[in-house]
Image (cartoon, rainbow, N blue to C red; front, top):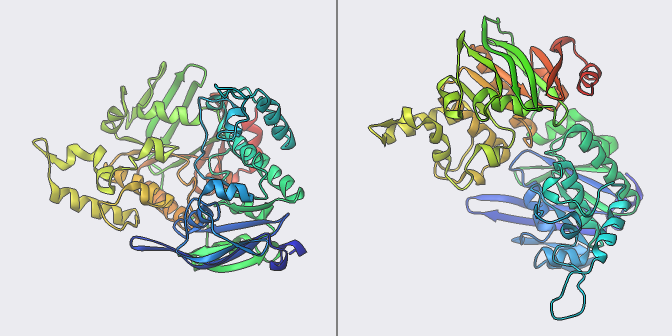
Length: 501
């Protein structure tokens, strides 16, 4: 650990931070310090208290107890603007940008320089100022571009530029790479290292342990709202991190599966839609987990949406158990026995303001109803059974889905598709933003589905995941299948060569 990482050189200190919500103690006597030029990584399972702690340090939440100090002086943050004035910039897990405005307007939103006069017109100097901030990050991005037209990775860079424009001394980054491709993540990590070299302190939350091991000076581990470990990077490896996070040793990251494969269950021939999906052909057998990977924009998610009926195809055929199916909507897909767990569970999978019960029942209403009325006893029995089967942890059936951790939200989606008894399951980034223990449970569920004879399509950007979980791997590039590999024999280098064309 470098000298700057010692408590005596800390810029920000938090001592004995506590925070409770109804029925939940989110943080219990958590302490930390961050020095200039240091990256402190925070890891833990979903629900461990990471985001709550970041929001407190960024001024978005008030602690119930504990003390914050900047350069040794006690402070009481009254809100995010107050934290920004003191030099703390919080970059949320969910991007906080105005899609209809350009890059410069977003960087200076709420702090725009205005011309003198009754109309208070925004001074055009913000474009030059935004350009200087972007240049300091080494980002080639026009300040005139509309944010809504940028990729997620570019939007994340705008969030960082927005934070730096406040003259931040400490960046609090909550899952900044969760929605990024590997290449975009690597670029963001390089920027984080550059900011550290310029003397900024960084609090970095991530579920991706490879990133933590790349960028951290120190690592702190939270479990059930408590600080269980704080170590310098040199004393940390992947196995230790996993054991510290879950409180037990996981013998293997990817549970093994031995399933005899049957006849083709899903057959896709010459599937087409515009330039995004161009003649895709493959099959998945009973009991098989087929991986589909490639760079962002390769057409993976678009292919899954065509197969389940979420989008209309321009051409091609789809067969389930030897029968051609015509799909005009996801409901047609469900009737054919095809279900999609979408890439973005919050905007495409769940109704976050509705209860766990409502989210579970929505696609299963025909089975749970009689003469147009929901049979409550049947609904309750099915809900309890499938939530238990999917290891979903909830406080109550009427709890809003938005209050669940990321892992439990994902497993809730799994539970409702288990209840639908579909024969073909399409999983699009099923472990994105999910902690190590929840990932293992999801992997076990996928293996159980395969063992029951289902056909599983696993779409993932994480190459170790597709190599560890799948029987075969298809690699997409520019809307086409560029190659097929046997997972047990594949290497990351082989996959990437196919992915980049």
